[in-house]
Image (cartoon, each protein chain N blue to C red):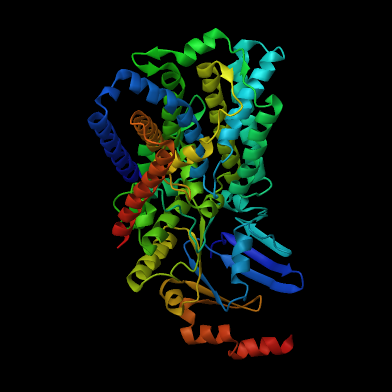
Amino acid sequence: MTELKSYTLAILASLWVVVVAGLAILQPSALDVSTVTTILQFSTILGLVSLGQGVVILCGGAGIDLSVGGIASLTSVVAMQAAEAGMPLPLLPVICIVVGAGLGTFNGLLVTRLGLLPLIATLGTFYVYSGAAVATTGGAVLSGVPSYFIVWGRGVVSGLPLPFLTLTLPLFLLTAILLRFTAWGRWIYALGFNERSARLVGIPVDRVRLIAYGASGAFAGSAALVGLAWLGSARPNIGQNLELTSLTAALLGGIGIMGGRGGVIGILAAVLLLVTLQTGLLQLNVNSIWQVGIIGALLIIVLLADNLRFIRRST
Amino acid sequence: MTRPLIEARDISKRFGALQALADVDLDIREGEVLALVGDNGAGKSTLVKILSGAHAPSGGDLVMDGKPVEFASPQDSAAAGIATIFQELALSENLSIAENVFLGRELTQRVLGIPFLRHKAMKRRVGELLKELDAHISDPEVPVGSLSGGQRQAVAISRALNLNARLVIMDEPTAALAVAETRKVLQLIRNLADSGRAVILVSHNMHDVFEVGDRIAVFRRGRKIADKMRTETTPEEIVSFITGAHPDVRALEMQS
């Protein structure tokens, strides 16, 4: 398992070097500290959401969270509406995480209590959440984020954005430690890979999955907080496309879609690669339609490389 | 003779109109391999499920250490020291041997309420267990997915030992194994009994039963129709009990 992770990281790192080298040749002016800052700024939100996506998939049972973008959108809207209704502004981080966790837990209840397929349950809540975000605002942007949050949201320390440094990176490290070094982590790998055996040894499978969906929601809620602090306002479409991009990052980062395989550091590497690639293509003025195609091709190639290794080993 | 670890008295089990077990008496002794044989649907598995807490009996009593016991759930049975190794083994192939042996009851050290794994202690304990079993697996850190069927049985047995099981129930442990692997698993079963534990072996394989069983109980149509020490019977006789060709069985079935 650790072997697999290091292999994934190696692939991603070499691809990243290829992307950066390509950019250096084609557009030398793009290699600048400000580019690093931009990449990390865009990685912050995607990273948080992909982390939750990855944990949900890791827990198996056909786990997937298509509603992460919807949760991010609805959370940021609800948080600002609560602020407008008189909630003390310093509580913005709290309400973001609580609302996000609540919406995620609702997904978890649909999956674990009602036995809905995760794909269907979260596709449904994706429409409900993102629809509600647009409907309650009429699509309008809600401003009024206090300046001290914006200082954090746009802050940069030696080229590194503060939200990335203080939120995304610590959460990735914390999750990695929990997965690797605690009994809970072992349970997640066990139930993600072989649910039946996990139940036979007495692991509370449903409760762990419920918590995973709740955590995914909380991560999406914290992404909403970053969006608020970065943009200075709540946008009802802040989470647009996050569901598929986060899924791409999780799979690219070595999370097995069937559950129980992979680690979260790979997800972070995949997020950085994806955003670097997108930023590079943007700098080279490549049409955005091509960008999407290139990312899709990348996903297939990396997973194919992974598969080839498995085929080689099993023969 | 010492008191049996578990005495089953008049155990019956009905599923609707189906009488799966009828008035079964059975003694389970420590240090002894008890083989349960019989055709499909003869009642062996039902009895095993009652002992492992998966089914409650419709009638009769289980007595353990001289005291009546009731197993309402597999957890109850496990807490009483009964470990059941099912055919599918309940192992996670993506985790290591040590992780599987301790899965669900890891050795941990709580830091801020978070159960951090005590890797070294678990690895050492599993190393000891594998050595005690003479399982010829050197590294407890190897993923279970890379092990052979016989080695996986050894891991499952280690798991049972780690729970301090006093009775280990094995359901067809050799069904999917090659010859050499089968020998190894039978040796493991022997070692278990020699270490003073009670072992129940459910098997269709007469060769296995006679190689490792100390006592053989034959089930037919929900009844226990024979209970013999291995030294007092032959494979031919046991087979005739199973198929109903034995004169005693005929006499019994004429009455009912």
